[in-house]
Length: 103
Image 1 (cartoon, rainbow, N blue to C red):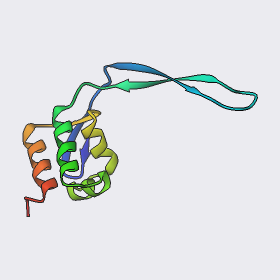
Image 2: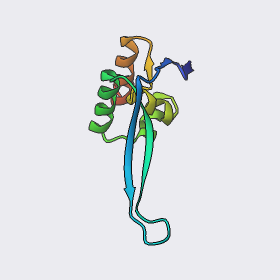
Image 3: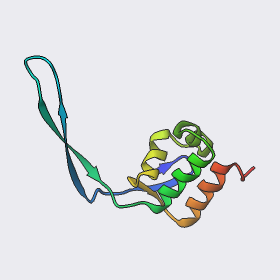
Image 4: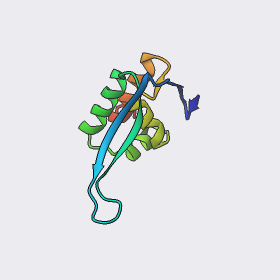
């Protein structure tokens, strides 16, 4: 998939994680547990690094995505391992662009 000038690949989930949360209500449907499943993806160390850089320079996902020329959801997918950039040079370029060193 091509996002702006970035070539990304989607990552398949490695499994599912089931979470249970309880709700406390005063009414006819009180005190019931809700089970939800979420997909689990492999760790993305490059995505973690990109998120750390973004936090260090105090940018929101929307601001950082605009700086990189991609949609906020695409940046979120990169940060959380749901998508990856094709090579290490692209990750480095993204980090440089986030820091504003490419100008």
